[in-house]
Amino acid sequence: MAKVSIMGAGSWGLGLAMLLNNNGHDVKVWSVFPDEIETLSVEREHKKCLPGVKIPESIEFTADTKYAVEGAEVIVLAVASPYTRSTAKLFAPFVKEGQYIVNVGKGIEEDTLMTLCQVVEDEIPAATVAVLSGPSHAEEVGRLIPTTCVIGTHKKKDAQYLQNIFMSDVFRVYTSPDMLGICIGGALKNVIALAAGIADGLGYGDNTKAALITRGIAEIARLGVAMGADIATFTGLSGIGDLIVTCASMHSRNRRAGILIGKGYTKDEAMNEVQMVVEGVYAAKAALKLAKKYNVEMPIVEQVNEVLFDNKKASEAVKELMLRDKKIEADSIEWRE
Image (cartoon, rainbow, N blue to C red; front, side):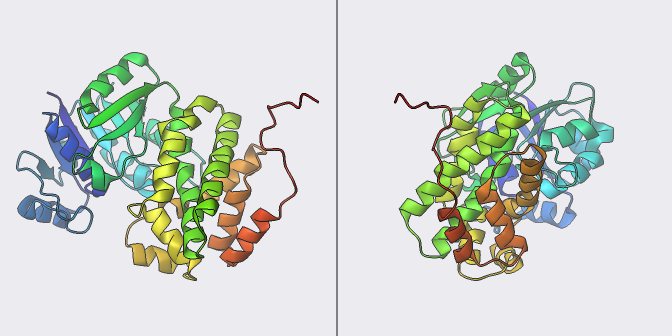
């Protein structure tokens, strides 16, 4: 049994708390909002984030940052990407040398273009930082529905230790040394999911969505490889796996926001309607900046940015994607004749 602290009491933090508690670990959940902690402690349910999921009495809630961090063998950082740095900065003074921090958020910091793991390493250099990602909606993990993810670390022994912490008969965990690729796949799939949702909102069909998923992973992989990630990562759980589930499921806040945008909502109206952080909106600008920095062609990302921030009609964006210059599908395959 390990002592695990979840920093963040949203849907993903609580879903993982349920999983880790079921694995027999001593679990604390922290939130920066004392009112949220009080409500969760009394009602044992987050009616907004995970309605209907009853939280066992064995899971402890606290708003005391020092109490949450000190003594924890594993800290799970489960806050929305815009708050990763500020949260890491908040609990950094209490982290001991080598303490594990597993980042489960997905995003790119817009100003620095750092992955969230790089942000945590920047703020808490003493920690051993890891990333957990994959096709894993909190709504299903919290109900202990079978799910598979990948955990990335710099050292093999750390990955194996954390694999044992998270793995169970309903949560299968693979390991990988490619932390960069896992972070890139997890962040940018949200941008493609916005595009898939927009297509749904416009009334397009399965053909359109399949095209966006397939060409979307091609864009993500091109950028990831240019940044130094391994191509194999993007064919795996944190690449195509996470992209499929995010583009196809109504659990996905990015897809839901995209549907609304496709129906004519502005990005702000869509985000207000979803009532949760829509990570793809924050990642879109960063993705475009990275594409320009590494000279990588990312037409879907470009069009999503124009729809989100330049008031471009979604239908016009789709038309531009369809009428781009003719291309070969894979440059690495050569003609025999």
